[in-house]
Amino acid sequence: MLNWIFKNRFAERKDEVRSAAADLARERRSIGLWNNPVPDYSRVAPSPLLRNQARYLVASNAVAARAAQAFVDNVIGPGITLLPKLGDAALKGLLLKQWNQWTDLSDADGMLNWYGQQALAARSMFVDGEVFVRMLIGSDGTLRLQLLPPEFIDTTITRDNVIAGIEFEGSRRSAYYVCEWHPGQPGRMPRSIRIPASEILHIFRPKMPGQLRGVTELLAILNRLNDLDQFDRATLVKQKTGALLTGFITTPNENPLGASRAEDGAWTASLEPGTIQRLSPGESMEFSDPPETAGYSDFAKTQLRLIASGLGLPYSVVSGDLSDTSYSSARVGLIEFRKYIDALQWHFIHMFCRPVFQRWVELEILRGTLPSFAGGAQAYMENISWAPPAMQMTDPQREVDAMVRAIRAGLLSREMAVASLGYDLAEVDAQIAAGNATADAAGIVLDSDPRKVTQQGNPATI
Image 1 (cartoon, helix red, strand yellow):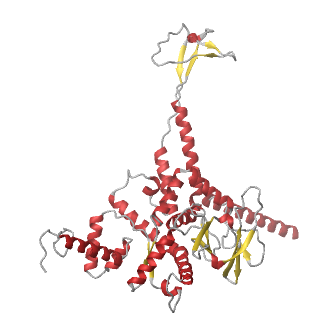
Image 2: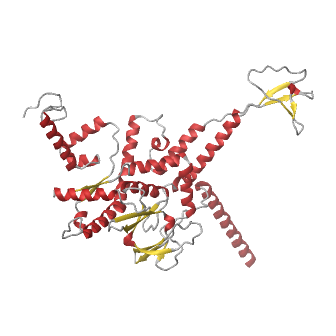
Image 3: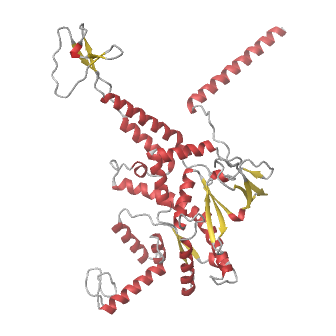
């Protein structure tokens, strides 16, 4: 009786194991084998191998290189500019004068200006996933910025309150461990120093709550980019092989087509353009017929569309292919693209531009080049804004007409409209007033002057 019970239970257990194994196999077939799961970046630093793969693709793959450049061109462009909102015109002019002088001297390495550093930081954020900015004080007491790649952060520090090279006090970052020189510099052992978090800006785009370090924007399409690159190379080799014309001579004679014997004893013959060669009795010639490559264009376009989708960029921007793009489809795609770029720009402003401006104001007040108020640097922070580069209009006439109607209907202010174009309303008004005054002094009536000419070109009556 007991044997019968044990046998039945053992058989039932074997059936359960087989069923579970079958379910697991079906699940793996349906979702694929996850041999390389993404680690939890809220607790560890990204793998250097992942970062190097992204750098390699951007350096050697045309699609990745174009995507990185498009990211920088649209997020930064010529630069994100400062727009003071101070009511005191003299103070506003002084602030802009001091700021513009500093933008040419911002780089601690003396290579770039402020806007060039913006572009380099955005590119590093796209390729590496993050960039570190060390805020230094120059010999003249002004702010200097030093951009550091991710490998400068020492992740070998093992302490309870240090994770991925970042020191914490509670949930707040208190310091970073930064290498004094590049850790890969030949002949020098890496050595890091502790730098307070108030002197370091960590610029990255978090993808999950509690994320400590940034991950390359190419993560979602790294494998697909590599596969497309290999497919392109294999197709190229196949095309080269197909372009080769090879002749095979079948002959019972010892000297076919007047060929010559090579050192290894093989007979060789060459074909020249326009050659008429007689064959001896019994000789025949056949040519190779290599297979043609079909479906390359359709496959490549499908992969490029998936790559563009993974990057959040329009297909036409990544590929440069406008053959299947209509005005309507391009406009719809650009509307979504503008939302994506707008979110990135204001994230970049929050993590880079505003902290840099605040530190710059604090140092300028200490130097005495800017007046101090009751609120200190915060008084300036509350009276500034930033103007990201304006997106190019796809249909300027329609878009400007729509903007004018929105202003006349009270749905949009002139300041908002001018800011959307990347300009400061006060500066625009000052230039218009100066231009009108110059035209009036010279006795010139311009068609663009609404004070004197209507839109139809008739004299205006007031």
